[in-house]
Length: 285
Image (cartoon, helix red, strand yellow):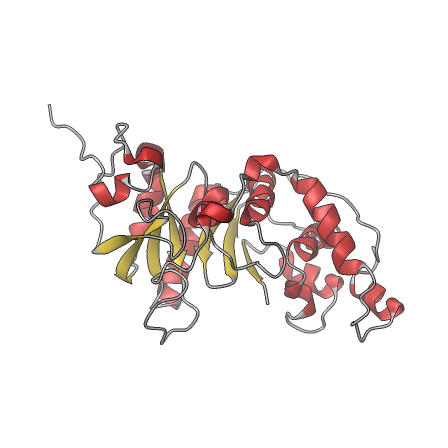
């Protein structure tokens, strides 16, 4: 009887205690290393990072083995294509020890609070109250609540695999990461990603919302950059009305998507771009 290959030491170290609990990864990996955070436990790496750009097709093969390996693949982009340190990944510019647990947070309450904070009065704002309300019309300052859960869409894993291949083909420098996470939504928290730090200092709050989107829209975490997040979406909104409800969640989650996105910078224009879109990208200033 031929036994499955167990995880090498650098991958076992990603799990609490570094114990071998029967996990296996029968997929050959390119050269890479386990990355230890600049701050935190020097014996506990946060993730594994390939030394070179991600090969085509590998993300899909690793995603298919997640149940056996316990490792979720993620495509990691750097702050700058010419960044020798490949920040924040190559130099361990992450803070996993400072994050709470996604299960401690209510995604609906988080989104409502963020909406209130982003639509409220700002003494440094150059916009008038009427101009600010127009950005989030027809909702204004009133939180509309969570978007309804749509009907089952395409297979979430197939959509994620397709987006991963697009990212690898379109971003030749993008590298492969492996994270010891039970689900993709938890990846930003497990690695200690600080991309949305100007919006929230606890990335577990981001993961709590991502868990909700996984369940409701078949969303999957595919890529992370210095301050960007890329999701595949199996069940995107298919009408203008449903897109407006989803756009409200996006605005609460990442207001910079609307404020500093493609003009015109209104929720309605942003919603138009969400209709039948199987990928969602977020960027925090």
